[in-house]
Every structure is written in structure tokens, then in C-alpha cells.
Length: 308
Image: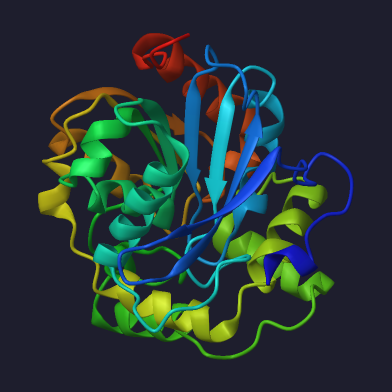
């Protein structure tokens, strides 16, 4: 579990939540949820953060720490990640079910929040775009380093010409059942190459490595199969709330071609940013920019709940 190897101190150490609870999804899956910040302030706008494949709530440490000063920040572990138990059911419908369960457990009826998702977390928001619970609670969306289809075919993890061979080899690497083992200098170099920009600071790389290496290998493998078959292009066209897109130009996992496709397909795209030299882990590699984008969406689109 991610909590066993998370940073204990420093800028990447997750803050202590004000509240912890368990949300129960449609199929009975139990999800670890944390609420940070101004939990008792009715004027504090809500932000919901969904992490990506092989990550956990710890991934959003920088955003939690900064936003919690004047927001209610809700984070949760995707099923099988962090403190959420693994489930044999891995699918985009499951991701959408889980998000709806978290929204229902943490927001008042009709209450709006800004939702931000990174990688598989962004795919979660897209998958939920037609759901009643999503439409009830989503004021605006930030999609970070994500895509809606052709993830393996478009991946740049392998420096090869695009085609069947690269796609097949990429699928074998991303879907490997091999244990990642301890976080060694070699492991950090591999993770940095595959997921982060060349200028990423050692502390950033180490924080990401600790989170990713803590994901159980069976969970990693199970969700890799979902990502391999991902096809949410139809759902992008149903994501009708104001949506902003962020991607790094050095992203090998979800390169900028995905962000551009999202921007072209979204019914209400309100901004797109390509970050020079930044890799796939945008909330960690460019924490201030991601936080600023969330704050701007809150300021423009969030609706304070009744009684504030």
C-alpha cells in the first residue's frame, strides 16, 4: 500500500487529513477518502482530486497543502491503490461508479466542486461525464496528462518508430507483472525516463518512485489492461462542463497529441497549456501551475453551497 512508503516529511509528505471516511461504490468496493482543509467552513469551495494509475492520495500532496488553506480538498484512493482494497472488477465504468460514490459521500445534494484528474484520474472524470452524480456536482474540470483512447499506440516510452512492434512492446512493458522492488538509484532513473521530464529534481523523482513502487503489482497489471483497451472518445463529447487541459511536452505516457485531441473534442474547453520540458507527472513536476489552474477554475465557476 502507498501509505507504507510515502514521504514522512518535506514538501512531498501528504498533510494529515481533517477527516477520513470510506465511500462504498455501486459494486460494494470500499474507497479510502480524505477531506483536508476548511471542512467546517460553509464558504470554503470544494475541490475533488482523482489520482492516476499506480498512484495514491499522496500524489496530490502539493495541491492539498496549498489549497487546504481556504478550500475543502477531497482526495481518494482509486480501487486497489493506496488504502482502497483491490477489486476483481477493473473497468472505466467502475472508475465512474467510484467517483460518484465519493461525490455522494462528501458533497451535499446539489453542491458543486471543481474536479481535477491526473492520467487515469482524468480518464475517471471523462468516464463519468454522462453520470447523474457527476453532472450534479461538477462545476468545472481540470484534465492533467491524460487521454481518451490509443494510449499504448501513442506512447513514446520506447524510442521506436510508431507501428505494431512498438505498440506490442509497449504493452508488454506497461502490463508487466514483474515486481518493481525497492526504490534504488536505477529504479529512479528508469521511472524518471518513463514518466518525468529531464529536468525533474531528485526529490520529485524520489517522491514519485515511492508512490509508484508501492502499488501492488497485480493492481498495476489489472489496470494496465483497462488502459490498453481504453476508448472514451464518446464520453469526451459528453463532458459539457467548463474543462481545461494541461500536458507536458516531455510526456512519454500521454504525449501532447492526446491533449490536442481532447481540446478539439471537448464541448466547453476553456483553456489548454503545454508545459515545456515537463513529463507525465504534472501535479508533482509543475505543482504551482496545476494549483493555480485549479484555483482559477474555482474562482470562475465554483458555486458556494447554500447556507454560506
